[in-house]
Image (cartoon, rainbow, N blue to C red; front, side):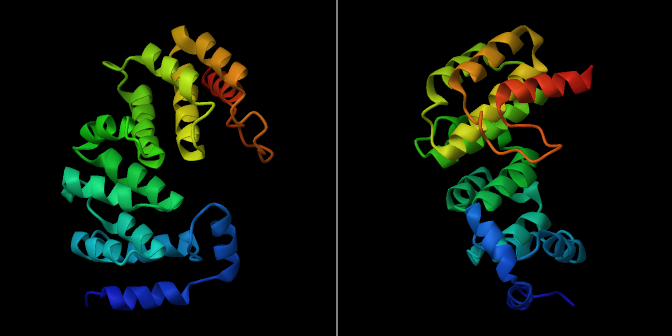
Length: 220
């Protein structure tokens, strides 16, 4: 029997954990559902595009995360994805929308170029995330030197989410493109963005020079 949005909202509410919410709220996310349990619900539901659209429309963060797990990425129009991104105010929703849905969409490249220079830094950060994906997988046609010029000029003063996305792009260019590696490391060292970011043991620092050198070392 098909499950309704009302039933699923009740199930998500029952999974609410105050401790999980406290941790999530530190990162800007307003839900307290364990993501492992959320993924288990998604596995049970499988792909259901219509249900995903209804869950997204609730505006509830946990419901939206569930929607992104059960949707059919290629079923959304370009304009639907554009609207969804502009509605995705929570970092985890934004992140999953870009990585799980937009990257698999036939509209990804169109949206990348639209979002890249958007005046809203959160929207622009999605454009940078899609650009980073291309740096790694399909760099042909990208102006990598131009990207480094923009990062050099704008990353230091960029808002947090945009700065993080630019930094990832900087690291990816350094990792994937040996001819630009020295310049990418030099930019990172001079700007010192995320240099003092607290990094747990056994994790790689997001500071671009350390990140680049570590990933290159692993590839050798």
